[in-house]
Amino acid sequence: MRRIIFLTLIICFIISSFIFADEEEIIVEETTGQELIEMPVKNEIKESPVEYEKDFLDFIKLRTEKFAEQDMCGECHSDIFKQWKGSTHSKAFIDPIWRAATKLFYSESKTIGQVLEIKLCVNCHIPLGFTSNIINLPIDNYNRLMELPEQGAFCNWCHNLKEAVNIGGEGYMDADTTEAYSSTMLGPRDDPRWENPSKDNKAFHPSEYSEFYSKSDFCGLCHNMYQPDNKLPIVQTYDEWKKSPYNTNDPKTTVTCQDCHMRQKPGIPATGSTLRPDNSGQAADGGPYRDNIWTHYFAGGNSIIPKLLGSEMHSYLAIEKLTNSAGLEIIRDSSYEKGKASQIKVKVTNSGAGHYLPTGMTAIRQMWLDMKITDRDGIMIFRSGAMDKEGNFDKNTILFNTVFGNKNGEPVMNFALADKILYDHRIPPMESVIENYSFIIPENTVFPLKVEVILKYRTASPDFVKKLQVDKVSNTEIPVIDMVSLTEKIDL
Image (cartoon, rainbow, N blue to C red):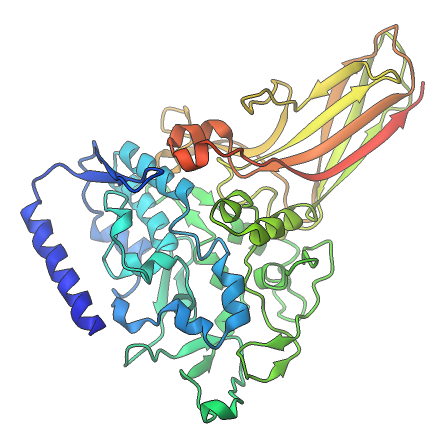
């Protein structure tokens, strides 16, 4: 029955594409209510040529009916399903910031390579919808999807991948399947077992061991991205890890992405600077108890979207991850005198992340130092990193982020237009940067001085969110996370 419905939808889609082939392309934007507003798109680019596609989107087109509904997985894998349900993986497609950003970025794209860059985004945020040809670009109506592909990176999708073909181009091979709803589920277990007598000791699906699921390459499929036109790195998370001390090229000593992001649970941040203990339990209800079950919270640096879409727990886990990722040290001059120029240095260490701080979409994400020096009476001597009511930084702020530039060298937020990197100031894994502050101590200063430093972080800048014009997000305060803080006193 499902196949009949699916085929009917596809036939209707094909017919409609011919009928409206010469019509103006339409973007359908969501509003805070149920009404949809149609907005015309000024873009003449339709598809990307084969020479691009074979390099960046190397996969076999799939059928949605061969994949199991995610709720079906939850019937047997209840704990893991609950963890995934509130994660950013499950919210990848309904993320309102992502939806608005891809539509805006596509409307600004002018070349085939720029359009393909947007395709790479759609491919990872809605993999089944993309590979089944239901949705290819933001010109498509994001609200017309069936329930299954709308789930983002869901159970049957991830556990159906065999290997990475092109990390950075989202190329992959899926497992061979013969029947709908009975896909062979691949995973890190070389002894998958089912021990529930009430189920006649028969598993719902066949299982198969794959070493791929224990490697960071699996995560690199989507957490690495290059600009098709010029191979400019846009998202470098996998490459950052691969070149880091966490990757020893020895499976026995290498700390993989999974070792940090799939060991975390409430109270266990599982970073490079904390313990990463095993999580004993059952992978399936009625299954055998194991020394370690990989958790599926997938917490990273995004605290706003989980909370916005109803998961306080996953927002908390993101904050817990961030607050256990870095360290601070105040480095003083040998002496300080009134009326003279003085210096103080701050050492920032990436002590807990297996990639740069920050990572991911670092042209949008922001990490910065908030420095304040006051005297004994609380009078301000020096300030850097302060924000106004609109969330804008003062001119002295030391910001850790990336700035992309177009072909003319002009800064651009739209990574599809990026031709070069104008600025990239971030902190590699297990490394430090030292920032220098200069100031003058007034003659009337009363010692001791109080030096307060906070390393702060937010998922996106308020200006960027306002530009997207998404009411649901624009009216929400962008949370600022205090990653780590340090206070010291300086005597004359």
